[in-house]
Length: 97
Image (cartoon, rainbow, N blue to C red):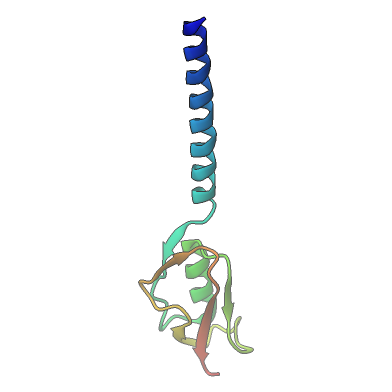
């Protein structure tokens, strides 16, 4: 009886460790950390593509010229080389605007 009790405790401990570890891994994997690329000098449409290709999911252009290839990005709301989560909102500011 003593051996079966030890086995039961070992199984319960192993299952608990797997489920706790699995939950931690699952929540850590849901949001990636990404470095913001430098898009200053690009046109707005190209900058949006670069940021989305890097993995960002919330990119927008300030003003009415988001689709205009004759714009130039002057800055972004999050500085280049900053490490943030993939769902961090990033606003692109362009000239003219």
